[in-house]
Each structure stands twice: as C-alpha cells, then as structure tokens.
Amino acid sequence: MTSKGKRPLEGFRVLDLATVVAAPFCGAILGEFGAEVIKVEMPGRGDALRAFGRASATGSSYNWLSESRNKKCITLDLRTSRGLELARQLVAQSDIVLENFRPGTLQKWGLGLAAMREVKPDIILVSVSAFGQTGPYREKPGYARIAHGFAGLSYLTGEPDGVPAVPGASALADYVAGVYATVGALLAVVGRDRFGGGQQVDVSLYEGVFRMLDDLAPVYASCGEVRNRIGADAPNAVPHSNYRTRDGKWVALACSNDRMFERLTQVMGRTDLLARFAKVGTRLECRAEVNGIVADWIARFDQDALVRVCEEGDVPLGRINTIADIFADEHVGARGNLLSFDVTGEPRPVVVPGVFPHLMDTPGQVASLGGEMGEHNAEVYGKLLGLTEADLLSLKAQGVI
Image (cartoon, rainbow, N blue to C red; front, side, top):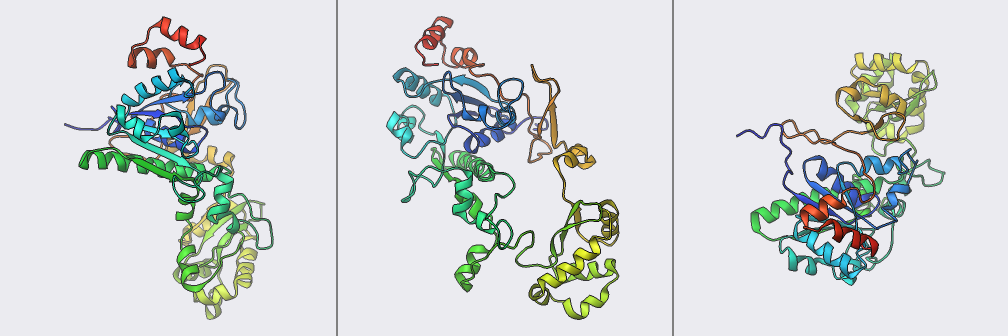
C-alpha cells in the first residue's frame, strides 16, 4: 500500500490553547501535514495575533491569516467552570495539546497535565514559555526580544561599537521555539507509540536560539573568549561578509576556508594576495585590510554581473534580497515558497510562505488561511462533543463561547 499523496499526521487531533506565535506556529506546522488543529480563542476578544502587525481588509492581521492556516477556530473561556468542562472534553478527544501560559497557570485553572491525564492518559502536552517549566526564572514573563537578549543573540547582532540590534525578524525566537515544539511533539508521539504513555514537552523561548549559536559556548568555556559584535562579518572566516555593489545593491560572500579564498583570488585576478593571506589565521589578523580589498573589487561590478562572474569561478556569492526580489525570483516560484489565496474582503490575493519541509511522498499543504473568530464552533462542539444548536446559543449567552 502506497502512502503517496497522503499526509503523515492524518487522524491526529491537536488542541491549540496557545496565543500569538510560538506554540501556535507548532500547530500550524502540524496542521500542514494533516493534523486537525482546533484553535481556541477567548470569546469576544480573540487571539492577540489578530491585531498584531498590518491589518488586512478582513479586520484581522496578515500575521493571523498566515500563521493560523488550516486551523478550526472556536471560542471558549477557560476561566469559567463550564468552559473548563468543555476544555476537558476536547482534551479527551485530542492527541496533542498546545499551551503557552506562564508555568502553573493551567494547573490553577484545573487543567494541568495531571487533570488532562484523568480524561486522556496518553495526552501529549506541549508547553512553551519564556524560560521553561523549571528553574528560578520559570514564572518570569517574556517575549522574543527578551529571549534574543537572554540567549546571547542580540549581543552578537550589530556593528562593533553600535547598539545590540534586532536580528532581522523581531519574532525569530517565537518561530524557533515553534519549530522545537514541533520536534518535541513528534518525538513524544514516537515515544508514545514505542513505549506507551504521553508526556509534557517543555520548550522555552530562549533555549532554541541559544542552541543555534554555533561554538559560542564551548569557546568561552575553553578559552574564556566573550565574542563581541562584528557587524556582517563571521568570527571564524575572512572575507565572509556582505558587500555593496556598484549599483547600490548588496551581496553575501561566503569564503569559509583557504580553498575558497584561492578561488576568489583567481576570479579577482589577484592571486598575488596568496603570498600574504593564503591562511585563514592571517586573514583573521588582517580582517579590515582583506575586507577592504574585496570590497573595493566588488564595488566595480553591478550585482547581476558580479553574480555571473562568481558563479563561473565557483565562488559562493549570492544576492541579498528584498522581499520584492524574493517575489520575483524564479527559484522561489519553482520551489512553491509562496502560496496565493483569495480571501473574502481582500482586494487582491493574500500571499503567504509555503509549506516546509518538503516531503516527496507525503507533502504538507495549506487548505485555508486564518478563519473568523468562532467560525467552527458549530462543527467542533456539535460533531465532536454532541452539543445542540440550543446548547450553543445558551453557552454564547453565558459568555462561555
């Protein structure tokens, strides 16, 4: 029996109790690959992501449309006794629960891991928080910007004598945490299938970022070196930076070893540089001089011409794209990195990032963008929990949904 065309998480149900980006991004990924994701929002108020960023003609932000893809939207006030009862019933019908409240909040409401296990013994609870479920900082609030600073990323971002900068995407730590939450959820599913039982997955905002800072930790532990900001350069390679072309555009040059530098000198017509700078250690000592020579050479070319010259010489150099460049790029189109949707009320199609990673036989897909608040109340509460239309009207009147 072939699996081609199917999605690997078909039959899994995810209850998304979380807000904004980090844990909900995990839900979006799981939904792309077939899981049924039920998104819970506070009645009348909705998820804060609906108002975060540029508003669309629908009234919700483009962030919401993109990151709440494929989800069934319901409303539920977990702070009410009836809402809590309905939440337990939804947990009983789910495989994975996502939450990103401060540690201890769900327990206070009577919906912690122990309570969930009473109704679903093998439930997998994915908890995303600023600093994790343990440790002295567990109850501290936090956002991506705080995580970037705590993990060490902000200190490394920017010019040497400048202010520590935002690393491009202000919510990067949220997305990184969402990816790690997805990995944790899937590992817990494998563990449940192999050994039985569910478990809690504990993901903080800062740890994923910290894990990705290459050799920062072992170098400090072994050598006592505190790495500082070096702008666009790399700490262990020169010339390995971003440079401006004659037409005012930018390129990224990746010259990570001596062999690459030799190729670069050949393309530059400056093999004489090998007499002084053949070894990376010497280039690191003379960083400013080497960068200056390369920058002067690059500044003689327009971006397109330079890219062609370097491709012919097998030198790894690429364009630094704006979002307009990305939309126009043929490779981005060929890879399906942009998906277009007609959305009611929007004057033109809404374009969002495509599905990643690419699974050749069981690919993910985006069937819909973020929905209206409570759009799927009747479907979820009616079909899944067996509530009647009268029940729903009563719950709405009470402010439960």
